[in-house]
Length: 383
Image 1 (spheres, rainbow, N blue to C red):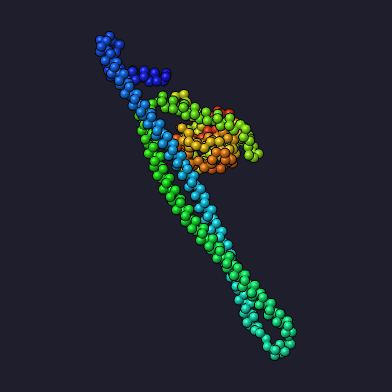
Image 2: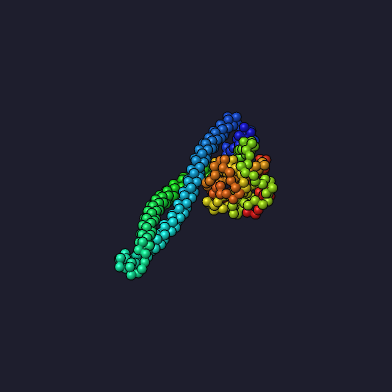
């Protein structure tokens, strides 16, 4: 109510000269007419602002939906690229097995050919030959029978290997068809993401146009305060919910790692902890500029406590590291880890974007201890 009264007082101060009002005595009837005109003008302005605020709320909800859809599309494409790489690797492995089987078939075939040539060269001896050569006919016949048995074994082995080779070739064809299908799926996902991005950009432009009509310094500060209050409430809720959740493995306390942790990405630091943000507000973390789609990595072992859109922060991921420490990653294009997922230092958890009304592709990063923001430079190595 106080803010509303203050805004009305500003309107009155701005509009008094327009209607020629002054401190000089005026005719009561004339004053009443002037005041009526003033009230009507205030009502029109207020109605326009209220309409803009309502439209802004609608556009912001639509923007949130578009950015969630874009994040989902990015996650799906990430999974498709992973499957493409895996399928290509499977094909390469099959190629090696096919080549190895083919080499085995060739080797056994050469041995069989040599053996058949030997048998052909020796021929089937006649009785006279056996007599002249003074050889034991039973021993020679056993020798020839052994060659025949070995030949049949090698022929059977060649047939088995050729069957295996044909099966591997069929598997390769299946994988190649799957590779083609995944490539088509990725192309479709790229088109879908492009359409969603166009819609997101359209919503973002509409929101900015509305902001230009209604924004003022004090309103912007009020909005930042509301965003901060929402984040504070979320952090408090998460902290309470995670108090009883133990770590999944024995790892060093993050408190012992302060000053040695790697930054979440390589990017230009455009806002630092404590920098002025408007009015009495200051930055509670870092704003790190990086190309859209750049990989965002977890700074330490922990559990994903939040992964969704939040006013002012866009697609936001929050990781609980235990001992009252959380790290926050905002304005992302895509979130790649779900709530409850355990992550290790360096795991890719998101990709850089400009969700949540950011004016550039950048990561907003915070570290909180017992719910209070702390300077990331005390925890991380240089970005």
